[in-house]
Length: 218
Image (cartoon, rainbow, N blue to C red; front, side, top):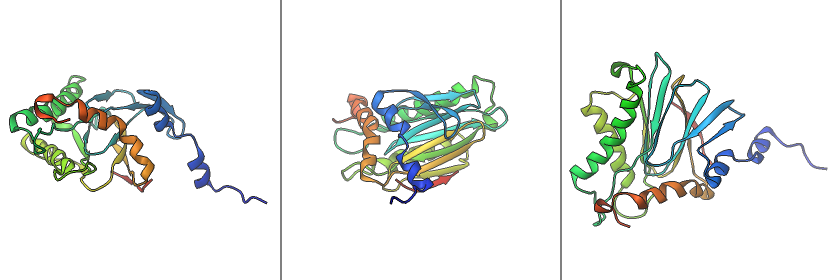
């Protein structure tokens, strides 16, 4: 006689909507658990949500995501970026890498401001920068430090940040409320989530480039 399934077992057996979306190349899908339309932010991309019915999701290895919103309007968005690495295995020239990172941050911030939000009200949270790539260069730490430095130089203070460490992250961002669910991806098969980020890394500019866990709320 089989014992009844626990809720946790039933949850694990549900179809993995995000994995299916990655496999099928879908940018959006409906998540009945959260009752939200899910928008996936791919590496090198960004998205701004003006609807309370949306959840923004991304998978981060060594890349960093900034979750930025205006608490008054509930409008906010997320980017997903990585600084290019040089062909020596060290970080590229300051001018090249900084321009790349600055563009990723400024594009998201400016698009949010264009909706009528004000710079002074922006709430910013940073995630990612895991050291998940082989080699002596701690790529994740470099990406994370850039993001922190960018906010400092631009006069922003992050409301929360979760950067570095050895594990990839899965991020669920709800711009309307500012809540972020962060899941560390510790299982071996979780590496399949990083397929898109690895492909993105290989496409970074040639002149500076070479070739399940606990959920935390922020």
